[in-house]
Length: 198
Image 1 (cartoon, rainbow, N blue to C red):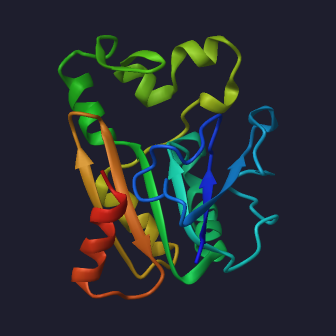
Image 2: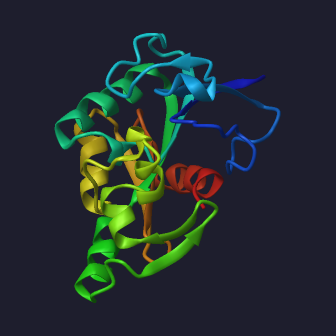
């Protein structure tokens, strides 16, 4: 049976290459604030009202939460919680402020930390948004907040998720987190994390 996942902030990407979601057993519903990327549903993290409650088996959100202000994060996570079925999962990733701030403390603010498909990425790009896209007028790329592994997990639990498990990848300057609505045994949570997290 085909399961549905909401690909939040999909941009021009589709499910190709998304760990755990790229198979035929998953139907992708593309959701983005930018209508020019032709999502299935255009909307914002704070207003996902076009997505019915308890209608998707998973929410996948890559590098979106840093694009909203901290006071908007609880609203966005509550929307993720609302649209998920009772046994649903959220998979999300965002920059790791702890490792980025360590780079800044080592005077590496402007030094490229890694090279992405969009070009070199420096700590200043991770903190405030990719300068190249911002210079081109893509205001959606501005960063307005951020997380450590602890604050991201705490935010998900505060939004009503029963359990969350995550990983910090300092070399990649990112965090990955999986959260569930129901209180699953630890072994099942670890199994889901191994399925969907890199």
